[in-house]
Each structure stands twice: as structure tokens, then as C-alpha cells.
Image 1 (cartoon, rainbow, N blue to C red):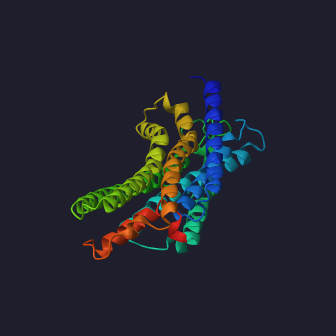
Image 2 (cartoon, rainbow, N blue to C red):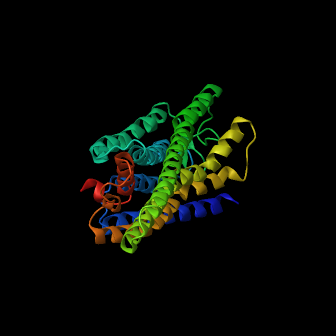
Image 3 (cartoon, rainbow, N blue to C red):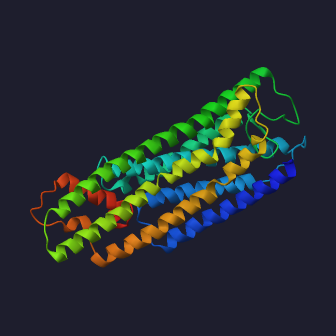
Length: 336
């Protein structure tokens, strides 16, 4: 593909991602789920996606014009800032689910201000360092921390190239893979834990009573729990999407480190990264449908299903709290 085709595809991907991110914003407010802590983190992730899409839509004409380096630095700063913010909020989302289910921490909303400060302020440091060291350069299609494309205004010395390479690894690729892999491990632990707990609950329910009304209630509870579990498992999509969208950049960077440029990824890596907001909106939309179904059922009962266990049941208080905490991930009840 030539440069013009790559640029058109990049603009298309950014535009679709921006539309998808705006869809998340509309659904977030329309669904009345603003009291849900996990969804607040997804909203912060969406804001970062919007900044990322807008910054990639900035057209910086490569050349030696007086304002070129300034504009290139601005775009590189915004792209770096929004990327790191996405990584952090995705990690915090996975951490939130892990703390709630595995560690059984209630009232996570008290950490809201702290998480927002971490997610929106720490990326400033990651984006400011390359600006200070003048490491934002043209990559033909966008500006960023890179020395993999020839700068049209001046040639970089070997020492400067090494600094840029180190900054690119430490300030971008290490946070990308470290935070997302740890986040994935959190969700996997939650999924395994809840699968075992749900299986145990189903076995206990079948052995308790033959009363038709109670069997019907237990079936309803099991169905609600399955929906909640699917919602939490779907949270795994966010870090996986992040890694897939940035896999092109990672493979291309590894190739450059090995002095072997993968030509097909030279432009394709940017298109893949620009699809991040669109993919996140699809994952969010899929979750939103399930959340609405679960919320509708739970609103009819006016209480958490797992709080309807019979008096004197053999379930431990710990298991019951784990169930309630798990359900609170997908509903607004945790902040009411």
C-alpha cells in the first residue's frame, strides 16, 4: 500500500473509533449507570480513546517549515499521553474487578479520585520526558517517539537514536505489555474463581429442596449469576484488544531492533492502533446489552439475588459476600 492509501485508511479508522467512543459516552449516560465504579473507569478509558483518535487525526505536513517541529511535538505528546492513559485505565479496571471479587473489597468508589488522578496525571510524565529530550519525530504518518523513519529536517546522531530507542521501549512498550498482561492475569483469576464458586453453588442448590417455588428462585439466581459472570469475563476483552491493536507496532519495533524492517507493518501498525476506540466500543456495546438484561431482572427483585439465600443455609458468609461483590461489578447497587 502506498502512503496515500495508508493515510486514508488511518483517517477512516480514527473516525470510526471516534464515533464508537462517542457511542460509549451516549450509552453510559442514557443507561443511568453513572453510579457504577467499573463503568466510570471504562468512561475514563473512553475519554483517553477520544483524545487518541483526535490527536491521530491531526495532519502534520512533514517538512522543514518553522512550525513543523512544534506541531510534531504537540501531536506526539497527545498520542503518547492518551496511549499511556488507556493502558493505565485498562489496568485499573482489571484491578478493580480483582479487588472486588477476590479481595472482597467493598465501596471501591472511595478510590475514584485516586484512580482518576493516577490515570490522567501519570501519563503527563510519560509524555513530557520525550518532549524534553526532543524525541518526538515524524513517522511519515504521525509523530511519536521514534527513530524508525527518517526525519526530514535533520539526521539524528547514533547517540540520539539510542536515547530515542530506550525511551520508546521504557515509556511505551514496557507499560503497554506489563500493565495489560497483569490485567489479563487478574481477570483470568476472577473467572476461574467464579466458575468454581458458581459450580459449587449449583450443586448445593440442587441438593437442598424439591419445592417448586424454591427451585424456580434458584434457577433465576443461577441465570443472573451466569449473566454477571459473562459481563466480568467480557472485561477481559479490553486488555486483549489493547494488545492486539498494538501488536503491529510491537512486532515492527522488534524487527527494527533486529535490523530487519517488516515493510508491510510500516503503515499497517498505525491503522491497527487507530482501531482501538472502535474495538472498545464494540466490546462495550456487547456488555451493555447483557447489563441491561441483568439490571432489568434485578430491578424486579429490588435486591441482590444472592441476598435471598434461605436462612440457615450451609453457604458460608464469605461465599455469600463473594457472590454479592461479584454481582455488584455489573450493577449500580454497589454505590447505592
